[in-house]
Image (cartoon, rainbow, N blue to C red):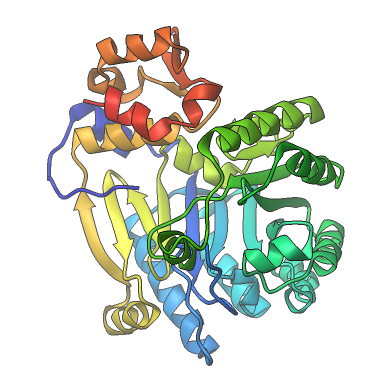
Length: 392
């Protein structure tokens, strides 16, 4: 997400900021990993020692700070992300859930997700994590064979990953897992076999991500040296189309560019982001959107915990977003969804270049129906370009 500093306001956006009818989402970041994957540009860090008690107290303080600024809200979801939050002590997870549901009113069906790596060590914590209150787990399988897992720098093996998935399905109400595709030299036959296997494992949700070479990662270095050649763009597009066709046929259609679910099993937490609702973000590097203000925590773990210990929160910045910036973000997020977005909301239509939109509509990239706009399947693969064309 972008943040901006221009302190401009809009009457329509101000009305939205005072509307607290939609449940709040809470994101809690645990930044530590056993190792750094070569494709990963997330805020993750490897540390030999972690003072878990100190981290628990700092997260509780950061959480209390946000709660004081977002009072009297209903809480619809909690998401533990990372890093590798399945490395968190289950007692710390339980304490944070208890604090969050004390600060805010939890919905009757609150969704509480934790991202997990499928190593045997972490799978051994699943019983305790379920007991701590986690009711949805997102498992980073990433691939089904050891060669691909080794290429991706994963610490688990294929058999170990499937065993962890089985344990997760026995202990959590809802289970999702991730796969990465469009790897170098991967063809449709290979990906179709992996996809069919994934669809046969019985989960209600799949996150299927094309490999992207992110700046600053080990893969970016290898690509710049000619030691890693990404899959051809047209071939990757073919794998994307194959993915949509197979998941549609299996009853797990895409509801977002990379996320597929049975109807009703979508990630409610992530839908808050994509529908541009309010969410609180605590922990190192966490972003938030609080009543029209973009919040950002210190990224480096040591800087975040020092700031939190010194003043009770890990905030690095709080920026009031302009009407245009909020419209850009809302359109950026909303067009990721297959449902599209309501342009009548908050006068978003005023920020769309309709001449450019109509040109894209004629070539099948976007579409408009009544007061909604959406990207087509072809448009989803070029979403960044769409935004540059249509947002004014």
